[in-house]
Length: 638
Image 1: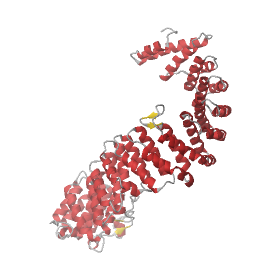
Image 2: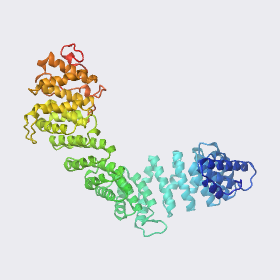
Image 3: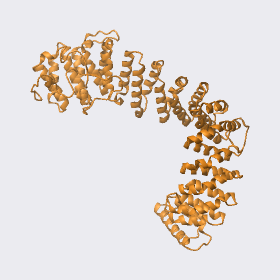
Image 4: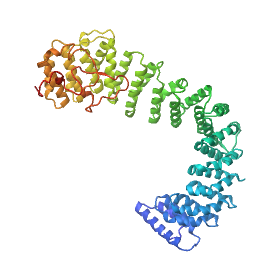
């Protein structure tokens, strides 16, 4: 490739390369030729070569050696060379490089150029890569251009002033008077730049915010003109007059009306007008309405206006665009605590979004549905949540179960409903529940004295049906160990009684002990339950003794310890097993057994259901049972 090849030809050759190595070779040869020409005297090809180098830079290859060439072209008197030079400066230079300071004087000169296009190049470059030092030096020039008669320049200067304020916030006071005067302009581009500049000034200085609260009536009039104006080909987007400017004005009004009654009152009527007259069938209209809703919710607006805003978000939930549905639910979630009743009216639509195919929409719908649960709708809404749990994605199950548990704890209409709900969740998604679920449910069952018979029957049925869900099996084993006598009686008014024999119960517990699906903690529950049944049954004590003795040589140390302790009770302390003693009536203990602690030695965190958890009366955390019985010396397997 010859050094004089045109840009279009270089692009064609590079795009025609069949391998990355071939592309790299082409670019290296061309860059070498460009370097050679940069070292020569000006032959009229500098801008041409820099343009090729900028394309190379866009492909990700090194182009830093062209930085000084940008400085030279910016100082050129020819517009075509200035244009390429300024473009190169915006792409190859930034405020961290010393070369950027070399163009400060050129930018200052060009800001006073008699051509608006040269001034525009300088303004765009300063707004793109101006450092703090450059901004301080050139801020007076920008303030001067904000007061120029040329609308094209004022628009560019306003956006450049925004960059300066972001870089050097102390310079904001310099632009405040000019920014205020720009609101009188008719040109939409100038108005847009002015609103962006005022927004930036207000966000960074509370004193400036107070000053601009006085211009709320002017902003309201500008906005009304946009809303009520007829068709304007120049600014019309999908039937909406300049939605970009409308959105910017609404954002500024939101800042000005926040925590201020006077400013909020001045814009209430306008916001109602925008909310009722804007067509939401197109994306542009939806954008304006969304900003209107955010403004209504952020200022001190009237209650009726807030209801109208919530209704707009409710309509967004029916939109075919998933992005609109997503932002609608995000907004509803932010305001559900303050406007609960208004959001509650759209509960049906929100619940329908749980069936959405988009995972993000489904997650937002779940969070919002959980936030809408109350004492009034707990039964109906929980049915929907439980139905969702049965088919929800795996990544949402833990969040769903936690939310259902929290809602049930707060609003449960009865203890039986509460227990049934938790058991349903354990049956459906027991593997995804949190660790604290088991002790919390045990505490709940303990306090529901009149439901002990009902609960033990229900848990027994669950146990013989499926032992794969560890949390459910643990609760079932505990309940059978504590209330097995109620199960054996076969009498229960709350549910259809089941005739269960002692062998049936022991078979179920032994199945848990022998199952490969049972964790050590689950086996601990089953072994303790078996031991406690030795005081509730009369004909199978020898079988229980046999089961316990087997685990005296278990490989799991914790399980082995319990078996040894229980075996000692059978041999030397048999009188302590009976009701009212070690294996007596269920009790509430301050600490959990170690096999409920997961080996950490620390209590499982509570979600609020309880602070003390009933556990097997034969075990204490932090000390051996045998120590409590007088320091009996028993070795494993005895």
